[in-house]
Image (cartoon, rainbow, N blue to C red; front, side, top):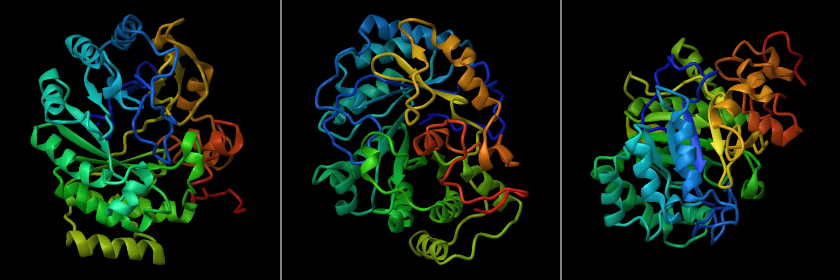
Length: 378
């Protein structure tokens, strides 16, 4: 998540610095979400970065130089890390834009929300995976969690924080996307970030939707961005291609799946406005994004578990700038359809999904339905 919506053409040189550094401060979490990347545990795992090591990591983030990357403290549940507020204070004191990604549990109470506001954190992300208790609670693994989540979102927004709603799209909630979009808008949230499944961790247990359904969803997300809420995606960079097409005036697909989602969106939200708020910053796993695990292991992203080194042994800036794999990703050195695609820089496909499907992080993204010109249809 990002507390500040990036410009369409970011001035950041992603070869030198990421836009987002995700730090998994702990694996501890009280939830057991079926699609969780982290396969979070009830207790912190051995090997977690110590407080002193955490402060050193914060200094390493500052070591990228200005403009500093946004530091997202995630988990597990970041609120379960005992020194979380001292870490937040240290990051904010250094001028690093800092965001939190907590779980909705009794830990996220009015006192905690007030502490977040007082800390200088500007943005918080909360997960919402259904428009009905049955759907959301089924994903989160706790009955009654939906009824706790909606008030938490409203309380965070009312406190003046930028609130991002994270939704993982899957077969179980595909037909609820329009109603989730309405909940996002009506709850006072500012950003809707839609995650597309990659089979990592508990995500293996959930069936991903088809490439054709991915395409339908991307088009309806573009439609949803015309209702005043910023919309962006995770592990679906082909959304940017769809946005480019729609802004060029190309029509949406004439599929039954898209029509059903579009019609429901208009039913619950009315006619869309003219202005779109679809975000298309040219980031991808390892390009503008880097992930630091609970034990200091660096990977290109949370869903791409290829160890690149450890912040215990080497500065994060050096790992990000000098690792050959990341240089290849940033140079769009892909194979298959992604390598032949005219949208390789704008999109580039999900490197995490390519790796999960083939073992090659530079392979084509099997979730993308687009076939570039000159590429044989299989």
